[in-house]
View 1 (cartoon, rainbow, N blue to C red):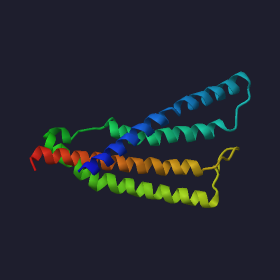
View 2: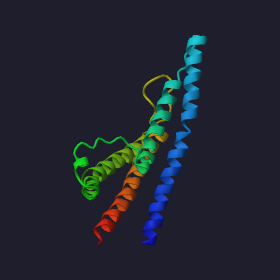
View 3: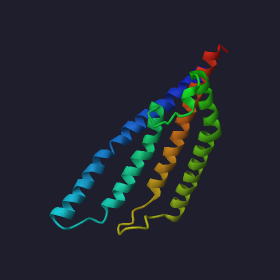
View 4: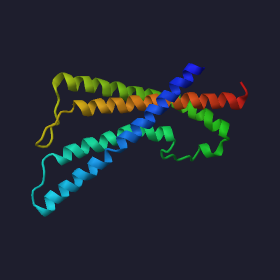
Length: 171
């Protein structure tokens, strides 16, 4: 049991670190958008690269943030049906739906993202739109890491929820 607890703390710690680290991408994102607005409206000289960079920074920050939000249990939920059940039934339903929906979906998305990252690396893919055409390899790697981390965080949450259900039933 101690090994499992160390693994779960490691996953949780890495998720915390990644979420807080990638949140700092907001600073360069704001800076380049301010730069673009300044260039466009004060000097009538819009840039060719800000859209591509802001798209990649914003998406990376958002996707890595998914696992952090999941760790904090801060995602938006609409509990129309589950609010009528006891807390024990709600915990059991969480476990069931995590097994049926969350894990298969996250596994599929992470697998597809990995395949896309490998393919992107093989063909040295660049962004097809715009003028700048940056490499898409780091972007696809971040997408894979984000969904892999979300899957790991889901596993951590699942184990903790399972432990709570077992403790509440006295097993």
